[in-house]
Image (cartoon, rainbow over all chains, first blue to last red):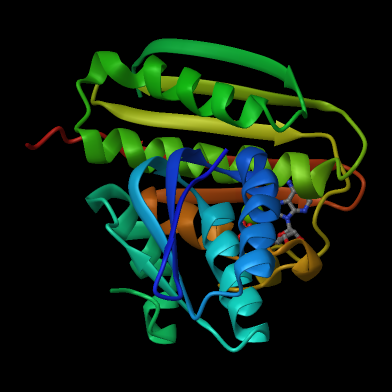
Amino acid sequence: MLDTKYKNDILTIKLKGEIDHNSASSLRTAIDSQINALRPKILELDFSGVGFMDSSGIGLIMGRYRSMGLIGGKIKVINVPENIGRIISLSGISALGVLK
Amino acid sequence: MNIINEMHLKFISKSTNEGFARSVVSTFILELDPTINEIADIKTAVSEAVTNSIVHGYKRESGMIYIDAKITQNKKVIIKIRDKGVGIENVEKAMEPLFTTSQQEERAGLGFTVMQSFMDNVKVKSAPNKGTTVTLEKQIISVR
Ligand SMILES: Nc1ncnc2c1ncn2[C@@H]1O[C@H](COP(=O)(O)OP(=O)(O)OP(=O)(O)O)[C@@H](O)[C@H]1O
Ligand SMILES: [Mg+2]
């Protein structure tokens, strides 16, 4: 169950709860099926509702970066809460230009 | 080192237990009055080690994961996470940032890097077919 919005070629997905290895695989399938169905130009992953994330979440972002690359689109990571910002900056994914 | 509290946890290597394990440990340390950031650091590091035991240590098999946690009078937390899985051939290499043996599963290779930057000290003892023990230490400072 994903909270999604699609407007002007932008697919916004609001993630909720805890992102770990346990939850990442179903999130991955759900997000990729939305990407393939809508083929957006931009995928926005909204982290405002995420209370916990470990390195499995970094894998999830990197994987969606690739999924969007395959269809010629881009990914943006938005509304990152402070506690999750620390693991995101540690991961170096900001170098990919995905942070907004 | 004066131990004021101690706990032991044993659970099966099921991915739903990742959340269970990190919340048990973070609840256990509450008597030290940690800050939200200190709790988040410990939760994340425990999640990394437990996930590694499930994903790499036991792969598709199931086995037991053991957590021993202690807190000392001077507010130090010591957490040992142990599996009896496949073990690690080259620990130094495994701990390098971005190193992963499971690229096809979308792993970033950052688990050990996260443990090292969120904790004060990370020790890894491992040998092929003997399993892996990760010891995490953190001084709780509680400065708000
Ligand atoms: N408990 C373990 N048993 C066996 N091998 C392990 C264990 N923990 C780590 N490893 C090995 O060390 C490597 C690096 O671990 P690390 O947690 O840093 O990255 P990862 O798990 O591959 O990716 P990520 O944690 O970012 O999802 C793993 O790919 C694996 O080969
Ligand atoms: Mg890992």
